[in-house]
Length: 445
Image 1 (cartoon, helix red, strand yellow):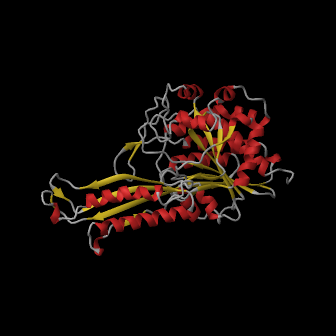
Image 2 (cartoon, rainbow, N blue to C red; image 1 turned 30 degrees about the horizontal axis):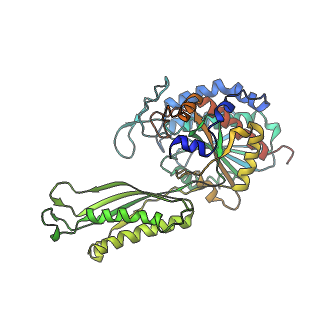
Image 3 (cartoon, rainbow, N blue to C red; image 1 turned 90 degrees about the vertical axis):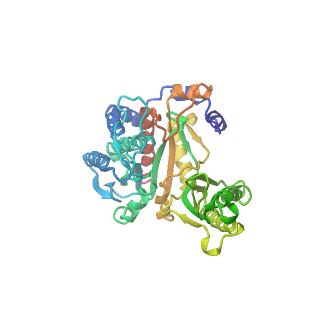
């Protein structure tokens, strides 16, 4: 689906003028404005100095230092590089605000004066540039902005505020690592968890949300397909694993088109197909790498079971013996789907509509991308309500040009992604602080 069509579908094509209009005076908003010079300085520093997953040592130290300066009780090294900050302010609910910290192995090409020049070597072993190509620098800065607003207004709320700087979201392991290291046992378990993500498909300053499933289960699946090698001129003497693997690739698509309800979203993409080394040699193995996306755990299980069934059946159909069936490996840990608690989501968004106006807050379609934010709700499904929302980051002029078909916009993870950071940070800081004040009223609500 093209960006222009997507924007029109969710009704945001006419939002640019509304978003560009001056915001009305507001005490909380004035507090954000007063912070913006310092926050933008923080943002530029984080943007210029990204770190890869589980290597966020400098980044975590910067967050911890700022949190301590605000009066939080701060613990570092949770889940290897995670940061947890706690502020108790009387009796009341516990609210956890989360920001992810890691950058991506991407060589930045934004041309920004503070563009990253960092290089590092990820797990692939290939040295690369590092960039905040997913906007985690705006997430961390927005978190600090919201925290300062709340610290400055301690007389307006009661309860326990928990901030977390989460590592390794980009590899889907950081939230689980923090939970395994006692996030919900060593520290106050939250009644509410809030987070946001910048969006490369929405105009800067827009807030988007999806009640229920918002992001997908993400599974990485490897299939090793055995064959019997031989000479390319005599295929009858061999069992060609490329042919078997090709049949598997084609048959896998029927799991979506013929076995799943069309109203139950699911994706199977074969991202890699490797086999052979010479023109005239039939190899003895082919290797496939898949990404598998779903929302519900039931659909996930059906897809993974179906992949194993099809791989075995196509091998048997080619005449391979039982001791040479394909090996299907599902990588663990996987990234679970993110579910926004519906009633909680609508409650928060009603507050956002009152604060930001109807034109800036919009229900949007769920996506098949992944986010390990969903781990927090899964760790406490009976006691916790959870919400992650989008904050548009596309500069207004660029969004308007894209609507006219004059410009193709970069996506998240693109080396060209440069959000309107000031709009993202100011909107997110105000939104998270306002939601927290509503959830933790000083009067006891």
